[in-house]
Length: 173
Image 1: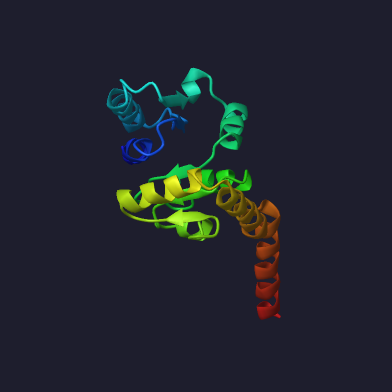
Image 2: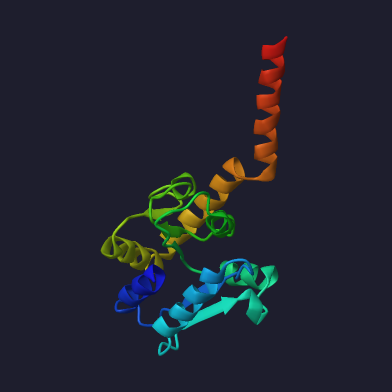
C-alpha cells in the first residue's frame, strides 16, 4: 500500500492532490484480485483516490491519456526488473519518483529524470518538490524522454543486437 501511504503523506502538504492507480488484472493471477480488494478497502473513504483497471474498461488509450495528464509518476515497488510503466511515463515527459531497485535504477536517473529514495519521508519530500516546481518538473520530464529515446526504444535495442551479432560473426571467422 506504499503508493497510498506516500499520497497520504504528500496530501498533508498539497491538499488538492489526487492519486490515480491504474492496473491490468491478469486472469491467471488470483493474488492480483485479492490485492485489488485490499487496496479498495484501504482507500474506501478517500474521494481523491481513484483505482481503475482493465475490467472496468480502461484500456491502453485511456492509460496513455491519464499518463499524459500526470504531474509526477510514482513507482513504489520494492522488487522490480525493468518496469515498463516507468519508461512509458518518462517518454511522456513525466518525472518519476521511485525506489532504487533493479531496472528502475536504469530508468530513473536520480536528480535528472526523477528521484530515487527508499524511505517514505524522502519520497514524499521529492514528490512535493516536483509538484511545487514546474520548471524542475518540465526539465526532468524532457530529460526523461531524451533518456528513453537514447536507451530504450526498439530501434536502440535492434542496433545493439546487430552489433552483438556482428561481433559474434567476427569471432567465428
